[in-house]
Image 1: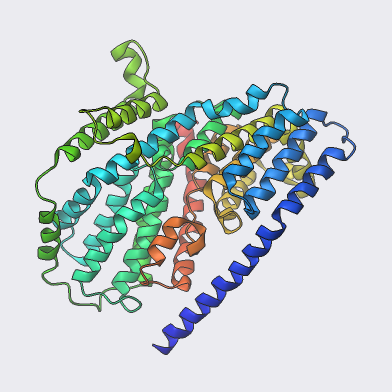
Image 2: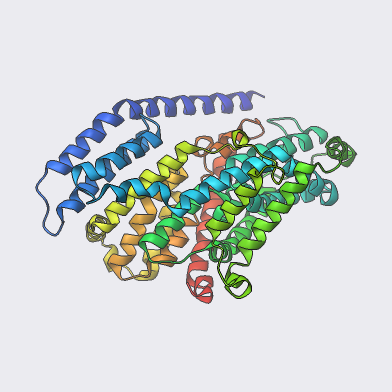
Length: 493
């Protein structure tokens, strides 16, 4: 108990230090951003850089400072960027900046939030999770495996990492209560929570619509790299790596936190079946949600055959909008507009991120910056294979600096696309491989809301999480590197 107290106190001290550091960042974020913008705008235009590109770099750099230091909400920073781009002449027409809110990926994100709301309100996710555990989780190890599988299945239906964690944590707590697991002492509780947050992250990397960060990354890849990545392209490229990484780290987790010596595993299924019984028979809302989700997945999965079947193609974005429409239609769906928890601040942030990122790319500013970085680091002397490995590992561990997936995507994916263009590499597979790492925000509790949700259970310490996450990230990056050099080629990427 004393050791636990020391650990807990140490954790609290670490968090307080981090809190004071973040407070300093917030305090100085706006002055630094203003200075950065003015310096870049007023300095003589370097040789080889167009004036519009210089202005794009200035606005992007200022927005970057504000996105990282967060003295104001990230969506307000995006609004400022959208306003400044045409005002300073970084883009010729304001429609270039203002029009990003109408991008198809924005509609995909809106529809994803509607689908999440439907899943939560209908209670379908809770029923499915309890049914899976009671049917297939007869032992603690099997129960852990089933929880991982549920996380991967839910990634197809619930396009929000936080929503899935919010859905899964009560299920885990019910299980642990039945197993008589004690927070801070139970190894079963420790490994269940750690595997829960990691399964959430890895499953998210496998499904394009599982988080808005993936969707934003695809937008950059298709807009700036000339790609044509769709739902199934992402699934076939990323899901095998996610499954392999999760399988390896699942058994490593059981080695790190062995549950063999724990007992109290009798009569667990009866309690869980009782929880499932409380839900009663399938409600009308659950039946409607089931039909809509099945239809959505079928349309996403058969995108390559729509032209032959229907004479036209239903895109990923159109499918999502159809699903959202069905959820909201009177008598057909189960939601009213007020029930749709759409995060408009994220929509605004994404629009500003696209506006600033695309202005930087189209003006030539991104290529100019990357060429300077390449010269400074000597990356141009590396083989293309080594560049890919460096990019993937750099992208994997970038969450230690940038705690927001969307901010990391906005900063890094356009940069890696520009890097690939500068070095004569194909930017699509490189950017896709980097994007697959963006959901691995698993090292510390503040690195994502999912981490915080699971950490709040008190079943594991920060040290436990760091130990498990470092191994997972290394294995994940290695598997993605292997996929980049082998699997991507077989897929024609």
